[in-house]
Image (cartoon, rainbow, N blue to C red):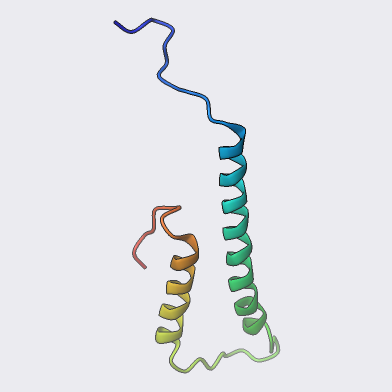
Length: 80
């Protein structure tokens, strides 16, 4: 019989939390490093109204794969 004050949780060791935090920090840094060059390239010529982007579908798909590889199973991904 369960006790009324048993909420079904246990405590984690602080080492586990530190490792999870380090892993998330690494993934965030990798995401930042992947996204910033894209943003820099997109704003490279602000005076031009149009962006010529040959093979963009292929390049976007490759970039999405790169992001998926960084994130792994950490989040639920929606199909884009």
